[in-house]
Length: 439
Length: 122
Image (tube, rainbow over all chains, first blue to last red; front, top):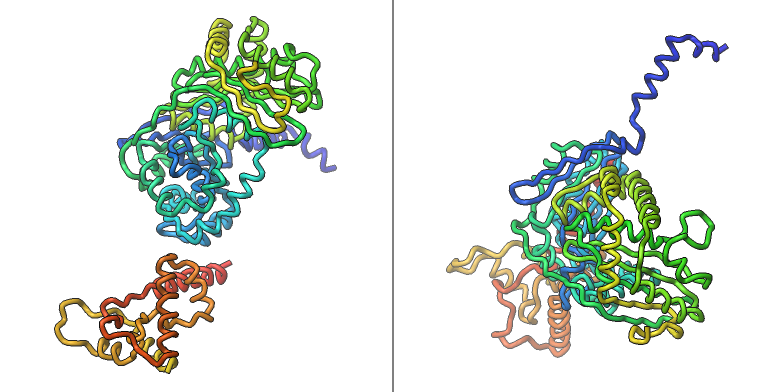
């Protein structure tokens, strides 16, 4: 009998209206991104996507490229120190309060930036914002709390996969210092970095001119209020330029596989069109299988290397003043010689056809949109753009921009890599991996 | 002897007087009477190391400060065994004595009360 009830037209209408009123949990995808700059030069980005989840990020240009030889690895320690006691709140109170409302606080860092992100339901985020800003800007680094963190540094280093090592070493080979600094602390610096050094690093790099505050699922006024309440030093400081140099780094670690990364100079974030052209080229070369359980992608590199046993993915990293573009291959030690040789040869004569470009564009658009669907990725992208370029675009508008990239733009990008100096980094079992001068 | 010192220490655990006072204050007189300064000790050196809070505070102490504390205690033990005092010029002066450990213990107590308050709430 109950089923008959819904057949009454009036009830049916009410039911449909009720459901359609709810925004999807992940929010609407084509939200508007509002960017502004405060008088103290902090960039504020707000994007309200009607999601029930709110995310807010404080991001600073204080990544590992700002490290010097004396404090190498300090950003690794710094991101592990997120959540320790601050000027006005203890570690205990910070963690308990954030847990109690069901929010989550994370700190991530890359070569250029370090970011603190708070996520949770809207009401939860609103309640613990004061603790969040404390964690991001009011650190005190009590020596005994920092010392207790040493175990985590060892764990982080020990659990780095070789792929990550290869990319790290590739940066070292390509840039030497600055962008060449690893995102992980070198073993010889564990326990050697004092609280004073941490405090000094924070004072120097955590300034209002190097910061951005980004909110996703929050309205502009709220985000601006957070940005205005931050206690940051004034000024913009200086980021030392880190030009591409090129070279080779090898790290013999044994095992069955060799991981070899080969790359040349790519595009900087400052040139959005070139950066997108490189992103298309990356997809055209191939970023691993797109079909589950298949062994090979149908990218350019797979076609060149042929039937040998190997796996590969193209790499595209964009930084504020330069970039890195190349490929990473994983290969059993016994086949390494031929695969590395043909990969290197491929990098020296990359050639893309119209079809490759359109496949690359399609794949890139899908990847951008899929990534944008996940709020955590979306805010990370917005934040990085905001702090490095001063503006931010949503995934939807970036995907629309991909259409404007022509085949000749991509060919130009390929030409830049082809004609430039290459860098090679290899890690793992290197018995069969040729040296760069033998390639 | 030691117990007397501890009792007196409790009595003396107050802030030193404002500088520029000509006459010896009652506190200063009591400090000199207590006698531990003749061994070159400071007030916080007398805190009981079997106490958990003191143990925790010692782990938080600046390493240099900790080394100085150990040195002073060893020297005092040695002197006490030999029934000797330090030469008068090396006695700890009231104005040189500061609470290097008490401040940390106070912070510890604050943390504990914060924890207790939270646990009574949730």
